Amino acid sequence: MTNRINNMRTIWAVIIMLALIILTRGHGLDTIIHLPDFTLPALFIAGVYLRHWMVPTLLIVVAIAVDNYAIVYQGISANCITPAYSVLPIAYLFMYLGGRYVDSLNIDSFQQLLKVAIVLIIAASAEWLLATLSYYAFTSASWAGFGAYALKWAPVEMGYVFYWMIAVSIVFTLNHRYSFIPYFSTQKN
Image (cartoon, rainbow, N blue to C red):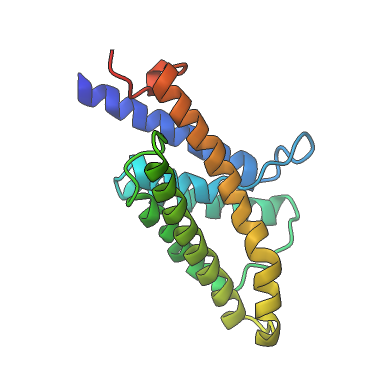
């Protein structure tokens, strides 16, 4: 019975993450509200809680499918679709692997907060650096401007990941303490 409950929790968690990726990566909600892309936080969360290799694979495939749909059917610019795009799934895995070093997103001590923050910064930095370096390597972008680009855009682009992860960590911590979403609570009765 416990395995079936855990399997259902996993399925629902993946469905929620997939829905958030589709809604935030695609342009479905742009007319109502604009939320930053949830792909990288989803991969980090999957690394923490959903350790089966199929979960990050599914998340990455859906992110690529959403990009393809947006370009083909919604007229979104394909400027970033270069040979470097083939490196993006590898870069995304840095977030998943970073999440595997974290035990929980339930922040119950300063030490846990520090651990999650450091691992998240390292994973997001590695992902951003690999994705951006591959773009510069496979396109005609001038390497002379890389430093200025990195200083301008790295904090902005990684900041979106941190915003999501702060919100997610708050929800996980509060849910652990108050069990307001009992189905996903880890609190013992």
